[in-house]
Length: 224
Ligand SMILES: O=c1ccn([C@@H]2O[C@H](COP(=O)(O)O)[C@@H](O)[C@H]2O)c(=O)[nH]1
Image 1 (tube, protein in one colour):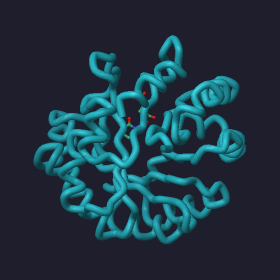
Image 2 (cartoon, protein in one colour; image 1 turned 180 degrees about the vertical axis):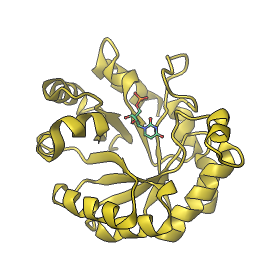
Image 3 (spheres, helix red, strand yellow; image 1 turned 90 degrees about the horizontal axis):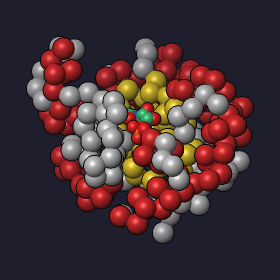
């Protein structure tokens, strides 16, 4: 079965990105390219990474007025990414326009509450309620807007799936038991995220910063 792990290739160094993808590409289901990589290498870099033959997840977390996001999605369309992210908090019209502008084969996925945030961060940013309530509220908005799914932590995925059984659930903030969490605050293990209903997992540093990235990717796959 194809792996449900997308490895986050978070580096501005194209040579390093390609070397990492080369090492792990037989143990993962896709490559996630985010702001760090795309800011450095843009569409030509994404095309080079597509050469590994794995689905490309463009994690650009677009967040602007509807017209600007729709035009950005149109500009990205030639890459035909398997997955493209926007921020759910951009609002319903922005989500609708992003989905309308995306190629048919691209899943548009709305980021709800970043996994690097916790309850205190919600208070500090003026958001009412806890992480669970915030994620479920934004999942409902994303579903109504017609996008394909959401990004949330493994702690909320079961609740989001309960209101959106056919949604596609992307779970980052994944850490093998007792691994360093770094800047992530809402973390779960790969197994727990899958058991809770994740469609795919996004895993970066536990693989890419391991002494032996292929062994780390294989070890994670073995727990799923
Ligand atoms: O809420 C979110 C949304 C996206 N991410 C991205 O996932 C990876 C996680 O990397 P790790 O090294 O496994 O922490 C990274 O590219 C983030 O931009 C997220 O972590 N949380």
